[in-house]
Every structure is written in C-alpha cells, then in structure tokens.
Image (cartoon, rainbow, N blue to C red; front, side, top):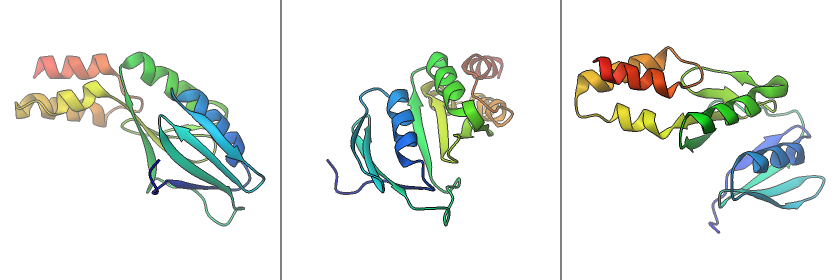
Length: 146
C-alpha cells in the first residue's frame, strides 16, 4: 500500500459512507472502523475517513474520478450516488448524499476527445458541456457528425 492516502472528513457518517463506497467499486472493502476513523480500499487505493464533526464540508476541490467501462456502469453509479439526497452536477460530476464530489466518466469520452481531428474532438467536448450525466451514444453521435 502507498504511504500516501486520500483523507475524507465527515460530520459523523464516515462508516456509512465507506460502506456505501465499497459496494459501488469492485475490489473494495472496509479494512478497519472505530468511532472516529474508518479505513477502506476502493479498487486497491486505501482511503481514510474521519468523523470530525461539522467544522469542514467536502467541496468540488477534491473529487473521486471513476473511469467507467461504458454507459451501463455510468448509469449504475450515477443512480446509486445521486440516490437519497445526492445531487447531479454538470459534465459527469455529482455530489453524493455525504457531499463528496465524484466524476463518473466513461472511457469513451476521453477516447473521443483525444481524436486527432480537432473538429471531431471539439464536437464531443461541446456535446459533453451540455450534459449532466454523460451519455455515450450522444457523444458518439456528435463525433460522427463532425
């Protein structure tokens, strides 16, 4: 394990958040929990979460980026993370019910935006800028029509 770990501050929901997160990402687990600190792994990356009280709130300056394999994974994660008080954002970003920001991004977005044809890459970017949840088919249509 790396000695550098992302550290998340929660009011009092660290364990609840960790338990949700490990159900969303394959190869994940809670490794320890006590009333103050929870450690967990998301696909091999170790995180620490603190029940630190209401002094600090998460914001978009830190987000969890998920490299999704396709629309099905985007849809599932988006639905689960925006449930129970989560908030959709723009361009694939959302906040979960704990206020943690996530980027739910299909691989196809990066592939299409890296097209060497600037017109095609630009069309994909313009399509993405109009989206909340990323729609792979709409990105592919924008790419094909440029």
